[in-house]
Amino acid sequence: MNLMKRILAGAMVAVTMIASAKSAAVVSDFSGAVAEAAGRPVSITSCTIQGDNVVVNVSCSSVPSSSDGKFYLYADEVYQDGCVGKIVAETAAGTNATFTFPLNHYTAESNLSKKFLVAVKSGSMVQVSDEHYITNPEAKATKTVARNDHGMKGILPNSADAATFKDLGVAQMVYNLYMGDIVGPGDGSNVIPFSYNGVDYQFNGAALAQYDGFVRWCHANNFQLTMTILNNKTEAGADLIHPLSRDAHVCPGYAMNTKEDGGTQHLKAIAAFLAQRYSGGAYGTVDNWVIGNEVNARTEWYYLNSTNIELNVSEYVKAFRIFYNEIKAVNANARVYTSFDQEWNRKSNPGCFLSKEYMDRFNYYMNREGNIDWSLSVHPYNAPLFDPYAWKQQSQYVNTTLATPYITMENIYILTDYMCQASYLNPAGAVRNISLSEIGYTSSFGEDAQLASIVYAYTMAENNPYISSFILFRETDDAHEMESNIAQGLKNLDGSKKMSYDAYKNLGTANAAAVKAQASQIIGQDVNALVTTRTFLSRKGWFLND
Image 1 (tube, rainbow, N blue to C red):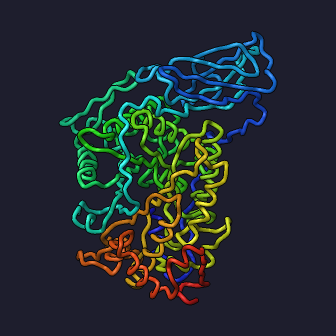
Image 2 (image 1 turned 120 degrees about the vertical axis):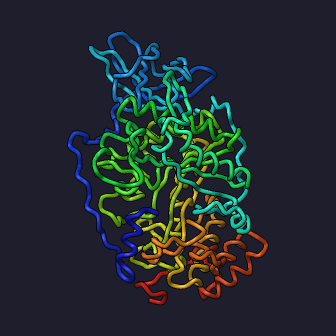
Image 3 (image 1 turned 30 degrees about the vertical axis):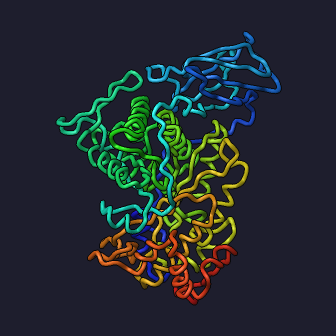
């Protein structure tokens, strides 16, 4: 949950949300315009690892003219555009052609996370295809670990209270990793060297210790782990910050540096290091990696000093491709997620982007540059955040059309149905994995409402075939959040259990029917019937029966 939303929640108790943030200025020297290249005659139909080589197949209906009758294949770094990288292969031009060249994995010439394009010689080199990435990095995976999928019930914890989580029957955990903290030598007392693609890097062993310990703790207690990677500002991680994120704006996460060579190579090394460290072995495994948090929330979680959506999405896509290819080249079974908030068609902050608009552009680039098996992490909180009634949202915020301002658990099927369309399917033609990696309900207006909301929301999730995770945000209330009427814990500040504690404990078990009956009584209608029939209830104002 982003901080601005929490502040907004506190600023209004029974009225509409207020847009309170000033949008950032557009930086004129980074227009961000990305042509959709409708006129490029050559299509890269596949780009895959085969053994130690990369094989690229191309086709065209009409061979573009050239001075020498050849196709040239360029390998560009993600920050390069056009015919400026290295020519890695050439072949005779034709309506169908194939390039084969070395992958050079783990060398200074590694092509694992580069993008490729076809050019012809016509006076100068002319690009004749769109860019394309390798789409099967898992072909090189050497530390593939069996996934620990054994239940959807989870929590984003604010403690390491294993007894509580086992009592609740929790199967999944979510944890945030701050990338800027783990790089560099720290105080020099605990330096972890790492050589990648011919460059030596250093990691801060003291900072890593907390992550090592948490991953190991999850493994020991049989909790499946999702790790969210945030790009925070530190001196050692200065090169990881995008050039357009280096102003005075303060937030927990900044855009990753996909504009400069040093930052780009550092990102590759970090992705490989983390995947190698947390794929079995001494520490355990991270099954799921989320690249950035709520990346459409530009000013709060993935800051870039530009309001141009094409620039923002295209820069994020480059970072996502790096992490996807580097992680999957270590552990083929890892899932790599992008992350969006619930602001589907309405902004609480005018400086951010609509999640639907951002996701559509993200998917466009994924299809254009080589479809991969990316996964989706969403946070379908109530609108507003402190609204206590998940089963009956306010009509000004939530409806059952694709134009709904917000995606919450009451209309979560709008999102999952949308993900079923052909353009959104993964390379195998299946609907992508969808994780509700952060969700919660307040007890500030009654513990009974919190109980009913959790039971209703969980029932919606377990009846949706495309949802694999239901992760409650924290087990214990947070005093600061409570100032904004957000008391999402299953326990009070003093550790005493709320009504929702036992409800969550019994969901997904043989005792679920009793809990659902309790929630149905609070709601006034049968929970299972509401869910299975997609019955949509709404109200006009703040109070339940408005």
